View 1: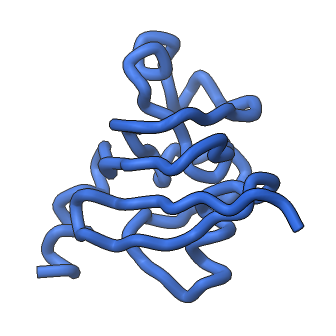
View 2: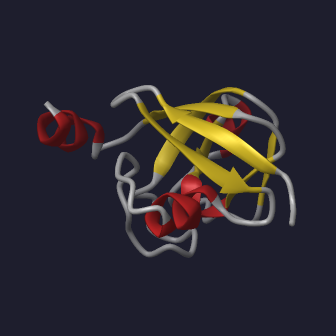
Length: 105
């Protein structure tokens, strides 16, 4: 069994665990958790945009139509293409933040 990491979504104070080989969005859904908006699950729609506030990670290819190089340099990535290498702390960004806060609130 691989390493497991703790993931905190700061916006809604949701915490879940993620195995090193699984992307964050898949892990969250598999555990029945909510907090990150879900779209295409393949890096092409941009709905699951998050900012990594703390922790180490790597990503797979993400569409530049959804995420600029500057955003990526600032720690903004797509959760469906995000793989933890340590415990992570995240913030949801983009158009879905207001809906998420309303839903949680």
